[in-house]
Length: 257
Image (cartoon, rainbow, N blue to C red; front, top):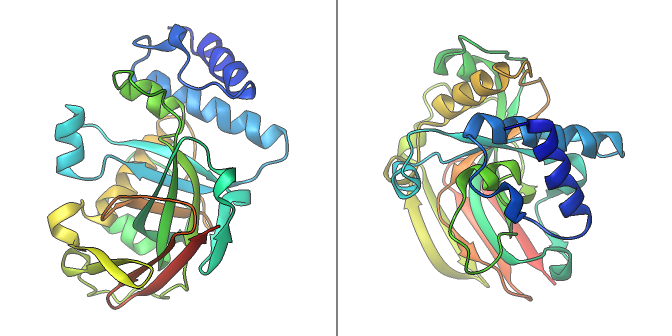
């Protein structure tokens, strides 16, 4: 379809607080949706927001099976929604169904531009890794069947990220597959996960991202942050205090007031 027209439709609806406009349901391919999303990012930047990095979506076999796809996708992160660990986030600022996911946050030290980026090149380009949260905003209307492409155009539910202290440099032999993540709510353990059981290799995800962005002429730039997928998923309620421990890396926390 005409991606400029789709961008205008999506953008105009969002300015009125409406998301997932009916006129775009079932109308876009994944590549068209990614192009529309990049157009949204350009418009956000034109009004003063700053590009801070990216998320890599659909980075587990389970999620791809559920979505009936072998593809991965990306979303963008803006600087105004990057918070330090320990932050208190006003609950009312996040609309729809609110969620928090423990994720690793990689800081890029050397610019990468696909095609041809391998996991080894991605690993060599990483400056450091931090414990992180992705804060999600469920903007899809209740009761509607999922539309994966429209979800991608709408930035994959991304609202913001919370980032803990950086481990720098990443030990070359650090085994992310064996990484244990523990998620607590109010000090009580809610979930644990082991990396290789729930998520793709992180350097593979970074290379996929660099190559996807490169297909649109966009580099993965030094200084940008990238979250590489959730270890567990949780619904947020007002008053919640969440903390995640990433063994060998560190902790991250956030409160929703």
